[in-house]
Image (cartoon, rainbow, N blue to C red; front, side):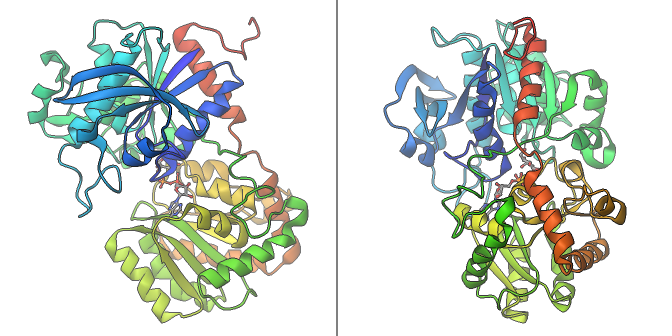
Length: 486
Ligand code: ADP
Ligand code: GLC
């Protein structure tokens, strides 16, 4: 089974969030299920710089007005096809916004190109390569299913995965004439959305199957509160929508072998985390190692509930906690955490920016990770937290609710608790959860049990990769390695 994965981010070539981790890990996880996955990715500078020895498989004179080459290669263990189109992708910094923080004005074209190339590959543009399935991730890839649906060949099947329904890839109707789609594609059954064009909606409408990244989020987005205008569409095709929980790359995230750590450890040598705790304390300029050390590793946005956390920082410090924050995002939240750093020297500290290695050390050294999201399609940092013995304190929402078991008295007695779970969207419930966490931390026996249990829980891709393989098999009618008749 050949699957073309289409993603605007893929770790370790380019990453701004969890999408990259998922797109980077899935090909490896699917290999043992008989699925060969190649990833189509735009040729951003960080991608081009890592690509060496690739082979030009197609030259295009006019990819939405610019010349382009498709380069196939193997890089960092991934089979990729890169769209080299300097006029579209050779830009500094973040893939989506200009250095002054505004969306690139031609994003519609940059990602129409991604979807168009994906569909053409699926319809046989490159001799000798014919994927059975095009698996599209998020709005940036959302036009691919539309190009297939309205194209000349519809034998290739398409899957649209929603990593975040809040990002719709919405553009004005004036671009439609340049999208290379037939006039009737501008309709409710096609790319049109509230008078404009949504790339995400296009994918959700035109794909053979829609998936999202946790079972709970799959239920949530069928309601007006979380569906953000797309709940009707999802309910209309409910039998072809499914939530498949994300896993993590358990090799890249393995505390026993992780080279980013000051001290490696396992569930049996959990006390060795203390060395990493000391390192975090020093890096963040915090006071000593006694008492619980909380962390945040996150985009600093309202989605992530960071405003709620700011409201509880004083309370957290009063409880005897310290807080290390790694992240960047909305200016008022960055300012807020800087303000808290000044107000509570030695107790609170923010490292502004993006730092993959530091994020590993924090998971290995902090006692608990706080994730107070208002909505969370899956969330990966709680899974890294479980794997590293950094106890997740999460809101009861989306994939967070699917992956963390609250340490209530019954769960402690039954020896199943892996974290602390609280009702989303309130600073009060967050504060109560922090209070409960501090109390649990003070009982070393209970705390270590929670940590160990988390470290032993299955956060791998094993189960979910099999589910994707089954899905590809069901829409294509082909068999996978898992098929008993194979
Ligand atoms: P989202 O994709 O919504 O941002 P996820 O939890 O799915 O949330 O994934 C976030 C990913 O980005 C994780 O791998 C997390 O470790 C990483 N991350 C977030 N902020 C930072 C940061 N400032 N530095 C390093 N890694 C970060
Ligand atoms: C999105 C979601 C996050 C999810 C990630 C990977 O960025 O916000 O919850 O874990 O995609 O699927």
